[in-house]
Amino acid sequence: MRAVLMQAASAVLVAGVFALAGRDAALAALAGGLIVTTGTVILGRRMFAAGIVPGGVLVAGSLFLVGEARAMLTGAEFQRSAQ
Image 1 (cartoon, rainbow, N blue to C red):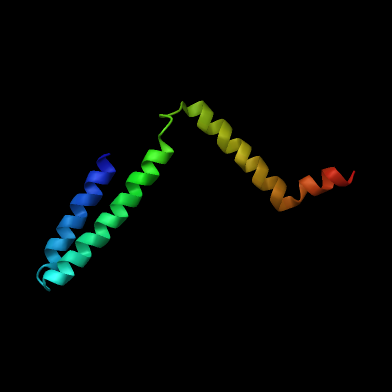
Image 2 (image 1 turned 90 degrees about the horizontal axis):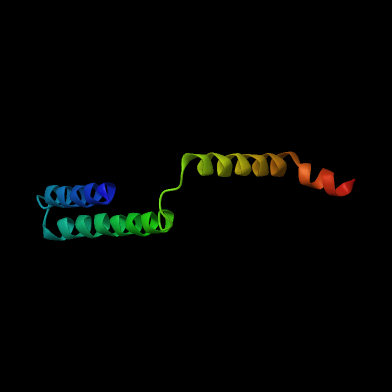
């Protein structure tokens, strides 16, 4: 939530700077910043919908993905199925 608030505040600050160039530029900067902030909100809700998991779960998941990536890159899956 803090990251989203900081991102929204930054969008407002940048829009204020662009206000020196004109109203249209300020509105465009504000709209762009808020669109990106909305994307951050959606991503955050999807990532943390189930809550924050313990570190052990994250490590186990990371090790699984590393093993899968290694198998794909080295062709280990194809070698196993050919035997």
